[in-house]
Image (tube, rainbow, N blue to C red):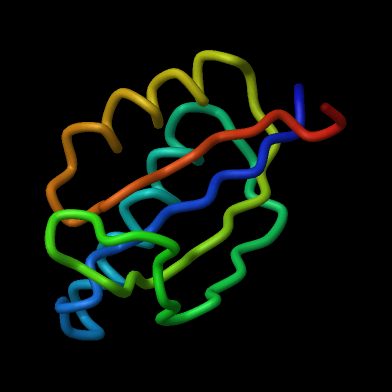
Length: 95
């Protein structure tokens, strides 16, 4: 299993329950596909470097997890079509 780091930027206009639901959805996708979560770090609302879809802020969450390449591919596929996620990036640790 390889180590991965996933950064997710969630829409800032969501309430706390909806934000937690998105975080839980990502967590369950990792675990249901055979991955193991090492750490979830909630950075909170931060100002974006540039405006995305008329938004100037985003709620940042960093996931450190271990899993196969299929887990990262499935996460990438689902997060691309999730409306509540502004941007995401998956990086293999050690590179």
